[in-house]
Image 1 (cartoon, helix red, strand yellow):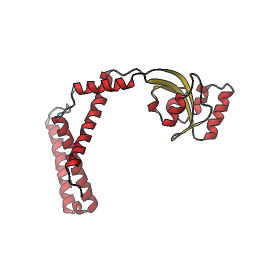
Image 2 (tube, rainbow, N blue to C red):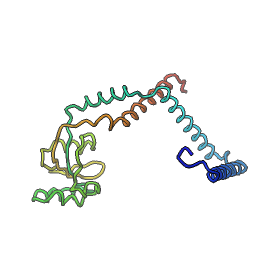
Image 3 (cartoon, helix red, strand yellow):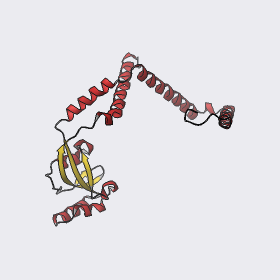
Image 4 (cartoon, rainbow, N blue to C red):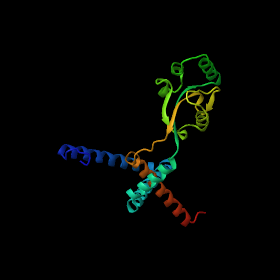
Length: 214
C-alpha cells in the first residue's frame, strides 16, 4: 500500500499467503535444527549485527541531521580550494602492450589521424568518440596518466607510451581551461552523503575511544 498499490482483498490474501509460506519455511528449518549449523549461526549473527548497525546509524543521523548551513559551508570550502584549478580535455588510445602503443605513436609521427587510430583502443567508451575523454581535472585519472597529460602542450601527444594499471596509453591534449565549480544544487546530495559519512566516522572514533578493547 505504501508503494501505491490499492488495499484490496486480493492484495491482503497475497500478503497473507506469503507470510504463511515464510512461517512454514522457518518452522521447517527449525525442526531440522539448521540454526545450529555453524555457518548458518554465523550468518544469523552477521545479519543481526547489520540490522543493529543500520538502525544505530539511522538513529544517529536523525538525532544529529546534516543541515543546509553545513552543506553550504562545505560547498564554499571545496569551491575555494578549487579556485585556480585547471580542467583538461584529452583523448587517449589504450592498448595492452607497450609495443602496440609505440606503433600507434609511430603512425601519429607519420601524420596519422588520432581519432581514426583511437578506434583500436581497448577503452570502448572513448574509442567510439575518437578517444575523447571530455573535460576532467587531473585527479580524475591515474597519477601516471595525469602527470603525462598535464606536461603536454595543446595539440601535442605523448611520444612514449604511458603505463597505468589499465595498460598502455597514448595521450593527446586537446585544450585546457579554468575549472568551473558545479552549482550547489547539483552537488548537494553528494555533499550531504559525505557529511553523513563523516558523522558516522566520528561516532566510530568516539565509541572506540570509550571502549575497552582487549
